[in-house]
Amino acid sequence: MSESRTQENMSNQAKVVANATILNKSQALNVEGTKKVHFVSLGCAKNLVDGEIMLGTLLKEGYSITDNADGADTVVVNTCGFIDDAKRESISKILEMSEMKQAGQIKKLVVAGCLTQRYKDDLVGELPEADLFIGSGEFQNIAKILKNNEAGDTQKTFFALPTYLQEEHTPRVNSGPEYRAYLKISEGCLKRCAFCAIPKIRGNLQSRRLKAILSEAKLLVAGGVRELNIISHDFTDYGFDLRRKVLNATETPVELLAELAKIDGLDWVRVLYLYPDGITDDMIQLIKNEPKLVKYFDMPLQHINNEVLKRMNRHMTGEEIRERLAKIRAEIPEAVIRTQFIVGFPGETEEHFQELLKFVEEQRFDRVGCFMYSPEDNTAGGKMVDQIDEETKQRRHDELMALQMEISKEKHQAFVGKTVRVLVEGFSEETDLLLQGRMSQQAPDIDGVVLINDGQAEVGEMVNVRITDSHDYDLIGEIVTDEQIRYEQENPETVEA
Image (spheres, one colour):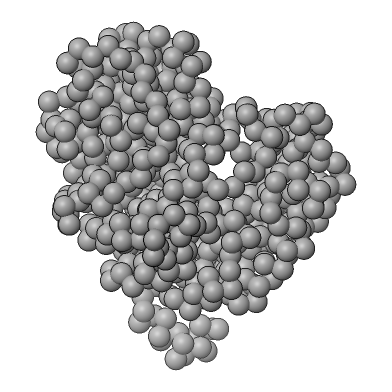
């Protein structure tokens, strides 16, 4: 089994609660089965959870999971089809696995996920070496599809509308470390942003019932999870479809957060991907007052110029965005704000871009991602006539990120001398001489880390770390005990000396 942007899970205890099973990765690798499956998951965390459900379904039906593609009976490539870079990564991995199949190293190749769903006709014709194509509306049936294929079924393609929502009894393998997990609360999206193809791939918003989400969350915590990262295409729309269609449905984002915060044994609840127009005063107050809710706002703003926002079909003005940011910072001064911008959207002038640069400099965000716009098939933006040339997009991207780099350096430098709580994740990816962990202000897979150069701790342990140095994206520090902190507070002259 292999996952993009995930880490190994070292636990060895399976947990079974309420007729649902969630295994961690090391347990899955130890399950004996008649057929070995190697799994590659690419793209976002939402796609990863789909892959984890596929793994759980396969294990339940008697398959075993292997970390090595070489010698596997079946390799499944769970693709991403969101932007050009993700598409290229998916195609590259499919071709790599195709070569292994042609060399006799693997027996069967399955291409699944978003790219498959989006470009089913093209992929089926261009990849004759793939045995099965399973779209994002059929991934939950992968075990049945494989078994039928092994029994002689000649059907090669499996596509349906992506209407599946996992249930309380859905099996799943948590492919991340045992102390954290992603919790997917909905599928599809209500929004129709001009640059985005997600509704074409994933369909309209479908929210899971609150009871099912809480059941899965408690199961994950029972298995050792201390940090839950809530994922969806837009958290702030959670429950909108249920309240419209289901009698007596009361699901809202605030209710969901309030209930998750009640779960014993859970330390951090982080929400990823909140559209700014849905961040209400009630939500801000709940996040402010509930210790388990991480003060972390992942808000894809995309731009600040009103004309560009309108062309993007975003439903806030620049003035409203500034007002919402000011409200969050007034109520939660320590809040971390992460955002993303698109440069080079059709019609973006140099004046529009300079306004965006000024906005970034003014707001001094904690984290910023920047994408160069790429026209997507069957989207409003892709049909616009005033496209921007690639050289201009690249220049604007580089200029914005250079500005943010300087802001990040200053933000990180401000941590030096402070003591923060860190979740230890193991040895550094760069060297076994350092431990690596994250503050609550750092989301897994997308933000920097805290490197620990003095002290010892177990994986999954929460420790105090005094920051001693900072890099562009990472911090350096040493573990300090509660006793040390109390002594220094009682004897400040010792610290000064």
